[in-house]
Length: 210
Image (cartoon, rainbow, N blue to C red):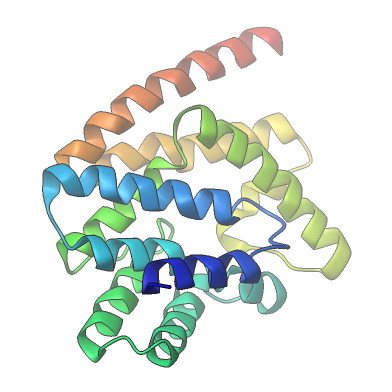
């Protein structure tokens, strides 16, 4: 079994009970988007696939302990890849991509692979899938707060008493700001298509809730 598939199986097992929207389906969409962008922008496919597969592997720990899942994921990725026999340069490249992937941290990506991972992860917050993920995530975050007391400080709009107000606040502060924070031309073109869908949905939602 090659390293990519070994990593896929490992991440699937770690995230099997992931309660929000950082599950294996998100992981594999980000992986696919990384490779799609790489066709036009360059970068090493192996680094991109490994970074995409491992970029959220620390999310369960974040749910329980708080903190930053990007840091946890980079640490876990290093341990996993070392045990899997990956060389030091590959491990460093993958961990570096993971450390800077989060939108809320606004960190500068240091390589083309890190730029592409940022873009692919952010694109998965746009379009029809972005709307679906945001609503599922809001529900999951509210459930985590009421069951184990975890509050995600970077997603406070999930806890507003008025769900519509919280959703609109989320849209303004994340999806509609993503396009200008993408690194590559390819990603911006994809984002433009997906943002059109989100504007149509929001316009309809406003009309139906007047």
